[in-house]
Structure formats: structure tokens, C-alpha cells
Image (cartoon, rainbow, N blue to C red; front, side, top):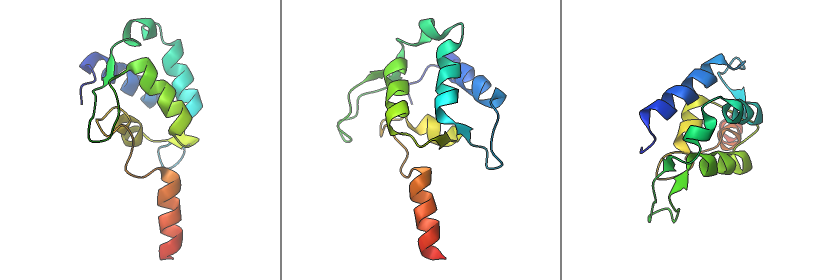
Length: 108
């Protein structure tokens, strides 16, 4: 992951402050709004959020571009690990929580 250590610390600190479900999920849009309203957001928004990936056909993205993509692609609720997977070269989690719920339903 190419995300700057200071950016990760800011994001993680904000995530820890958010109200969570019993499963550790936060409301995605509320979390993104918290990030965007943070006093240092303008300084981190233009930093590299995710490196280019030829394998997954994704360009390099800034932190702001990655957050915009999360807003479009993520489920209504997101947990920390899933959120951070959007910043990897793959650019998204292997499975969204809705896919996991579907898989669980099939097995029961």
C-alpha cells in the first residue's frame, strides 16, 4: 500500500471515533463526511491514495479520488479492513459485505 503513514493515522483515528454497529461497521457516508471535514483534509486530499495497477486496470488515484470511488462502490456500512482495501492496488475488497451476506445465506 502506498498510502502515507500520516494519512493512515488520521483515517484510523477518525474511524475509531465513529459510532459502530456490533460488528464494527460504520455508516460509510458518515465516515467519508467526517474525513472530508477534518482540519487536515485539504493537505491530504491530493496525496497518492492508491498506486496504478495494470493487473486490475486502475489508474493512480489521489486520496480524494479514492474516497469518491468508495462513496460510489461501497455498501452503506463499512468496516476498517474493507475500507483500507480500497487503497490497495486491487482498489476494492475481494468481497463486499453484501456478497458475504449472500454467501452466508447460501450456506444455511
